[in-house]
Amino acid sequence: MQIMERDVFVINDAVAGFEGAGFPVRRAFAGIDLRLTDPFLMLDHMGAVDYAPGEAKGAPDHPHRGFETVTYLLEGEFEHRDSTGGGGLLRPGDTQWMTAGAGIVHSEMPTHDLLTKGGLLHGTQLWVNLPAANKWADPVYQDLSGQAFGAWTSPDGGDVHIIAGEVDGQKGPGSTHTPITYLHASIPNGGRIQLPWKAGFNGVVYVLEGSGTVGASRVDIQAGQTAVLTAATPVADGVADTIVIHGGASVASSTGRMEVLVMGGAPIREQIAWYGPFVMNTKEEIEQAVTDYQHGRMGVIPPKHDS
Image: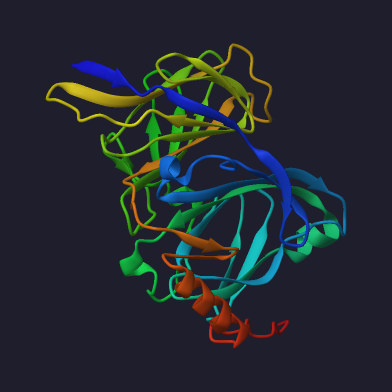
């Protein structure tokens, strides 16, 4: 079978900033045309930060409407609570997939242990747009244990954890409103992965740690950089569409491997109106979201009672 490799359209450097109550993030998609990442809106890389006791920070009560947040925790612990009365704990390897839909108020805060004892916090949050038909859906959580992720091993030695979508018949547990694939790949020094990829999906690669190359032209890429891959072309019979990533000969990372997120999906191609934590289709819908939040129509997080 003939193999067609995606190539690199552009490499983008993440922009450093702060979120929530002041925790550091690298904003991976800053400066990239959203039409290239559709249906993905934003990817924040949180940390890694080694907090001293009393230093850990999170994101206190704040609203969302019109999209989904996908929080993937690599190190540390986070607790989430929301205006529906729900809540949960994220531990290393876990993912919280929150469909904000018509509107929710939630918080994402370090646990008591992380706050009092200190420790490492490292993770990512991906924002996934919702089609107009789903923006008014009821809020829903998917708490996905890392142990439930799909697993795929490249013949060349790379390990892939599938959060959502499918790779070579192996599926991730995440339920999506629009077809996407979202995975974490770990590539040994000098190794590579050759991911079967769906024609019609775009392709985006973000390097969490380490360095290597990506695409048919083997373009250099390192931690904190995003590669937007060339658009898919219709695949003829007998031709396979793939994404190829090579790990560097010597990789400096906490795992000794090149760690990357790979994501892609079928573009929604709808008008976007975006203001802070609200992503809708029109200016009028944004104004309504602001008014609804100000008047408490997205609810409030109930007080926490210690047991």
